[in-house]
Length: 300
Image (cartoon, rainbow, N blue to C red; front, side, top):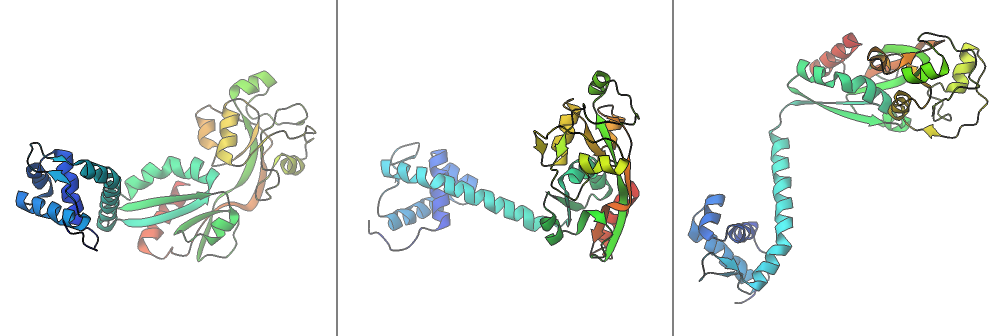
């Protein structure tokens, strides 16, 4: 065979791939929805390009030659990748649902958004929601999401801003740890000196930490050195549920854990009127996003 200086066609590769898989050009033709002679023709065209014989046509079932099997092993995964990518693209192009993106800090996304996501989807079955969690303030500020949840005061940076949950921060711990420490639900702490504390990143000024909380509620802070800190709120909550120590809880985010009895609230509470979780959007006036925002605000 004379080798051609041209790449093989995708159709010829698919015909060869199906023939090797089924051991039959007839079965390959059935899978591809074409005639058996056309399968044979496409394989011959591929052989012309490569300059060698790929399949033994005299034996049944049809089997690849040694060179054909080597070639098949090299192209099989690539063809499978192309097919998956093609199927995915078809799905994307045929999905005409309204897509709405929501960006928020990890803690809020995990503890407030995710528990509501199923009900939100039921309320808007024709919408496709994309949650974009982050721990980075710069990422949140640069986000092009349709809806953004900030933890701050009303900043006036968006066309629509609404304070959903005002800041209220209080200690929480597992019932088991409370029994061990002799604490009861609702009890006000007066001294943190001998209490195991779970710390979020103390260098992050966006949220109160034990030091700023103690100062805010005017109680004696802990003098113990920090030996471990967590970099996101869901991790620190799980540690508190496991009884590893007390953590600071935010109203709205920690509510379900208290209602389920996994954590108990303690005091005192640090409140900051005008500061908290704010829902923001530059697309509030659009029908779809406006309705979703209204649902989220009402649910809060």
